[in-house]
Length: 455
Image (cartoon, rainbow, N blue to C red; front, side, top):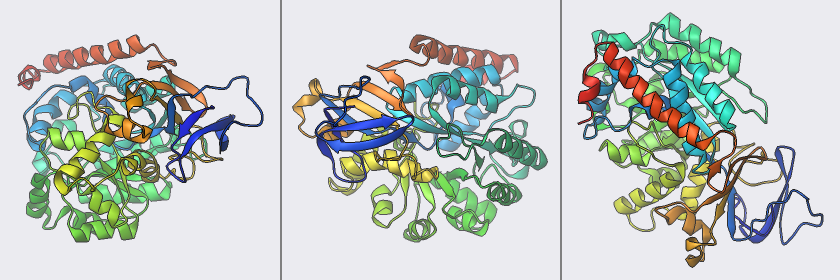
């Protein structure tokens, strides 16, 4: 890759340089032109090269339930949709994951996590379905085996019909870690352990899940501090605030990252920084549900790690990961002034921040020799050429610059805004059919409200 503006995230930017790839690794980065010319070189003239973006919170199955409960708070939205999701099967999940991951790739994403926590009985292998979708698309995948064991009869929020029992959860979680988790440097697939949230999971499941994850040396993930309703629920049901509860259960540490963390106190932020606990900031979803604005600029200033996530598409319809950089920047500036977050800080959250959340900062998140060749090449020579700073053109733009190339381990996944590993049109149709199928299944199971939650 030659004649390209390089924003490595770590180290100085290069106005015109090259990136040499050998196998799936970055072999060399420099200014000017390389001494030896590769016959397969990519001319990056008029383009910006960044690390591939890393999505650290998602619910891919929710592609099939977009546009529902449009004016609801988080708890209202969950109550409206739990039973719809309880009708999903493996076919719904694979179609939704194909569309969701393809859409992410088109926004510069080379690695995505996913938090799947609804496992209705007898509906096929839902976890395998999304893994297969990621394999076909060719992006790195970090699915998290989620779970809920605290239904309404136990004081939780979800209906009892969509929760599992503790023994089933632990056995299924151990099984998918053993079957799929690849800890190698070039891994395309790693697995995390992810009970859903304090209001849908028992304390026993949280502690047992943490013990399981640490015994198998995999990471821990859950939702935390998303809304004030959650804080009130924890105070009423558990007698303490959410972060205090997580600390009591052994859920703070460098192997843990939380989704959202909107409502943190100063002391909470300091505990995250001191323990190495990460956060996945999902600004569009937080805005859509009226949850609030996370204290991202303060978290960064105090040394806490923050990555980005698009969250599930049911609360963040058609959200791009590149667009979340802009949303994060604008939310912080709206709340705290124009110096609260810079374009380069937003890019770092979308790359190195995400790599740290997933425990892969040695392999991903920056353009450096020896790291994996996961690279996004953005075309900044058309309308964006009116902006002298290409990083500004990427982060500030309402519409992302065209994606000239997306490489995952040196392999082309996107070229000139088109998926190359799978049919782009077929991926879009798969997502639409997943939605139609889920709505039919929900109605067949007697949940007529599947139609009503459109309002």
